[in-house]
Image (tube, rainbow, N blue to C red; front, side):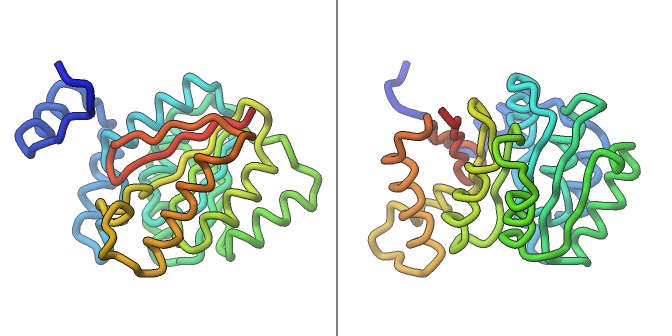
Length: 220
């Protein structure tokens, strides 16, 4: 028994995957291809992808925003969990890495559910607000440049319906957020966001120590 979250040793983490991970073959193949690419550590952990799929299903999300696509593991996981009439708006600025994503979306048969926008996400999100889509989205996943997280949050919260969810990746930042010796711009931005979310009475939240830390926000 424990009154605090366990530290996951390598042995315990392997056990967790062995008895709980049900990763679709298409996701496994994408993860293995990405592992051979530069920047592979930007991909979420498979157990986090499975957890996010459960959140999509529990919440009944049909309209999802993703800020930061990379090679598309998280967007593919969520698209597979959406109902057939679901739609995912994927925001990124990198044609090369999202080319991998597009290939796997097509292989999985979900490309028709995903709209990719190669442009700064702040512009894409603002355009959706300007088009009158405030309060019309069910879930957002933010996993892009850390210094812009607060701006992504403001726009996604406006686009989200009451009861909708926002998921923030990397909120523990490898432990750096709690390390007083770390003072780089990304770490400062994440610390500020974590404090901002904790104090925001427009939402409910839970920070979950999965992957590199995932904060789940529910709009009141």
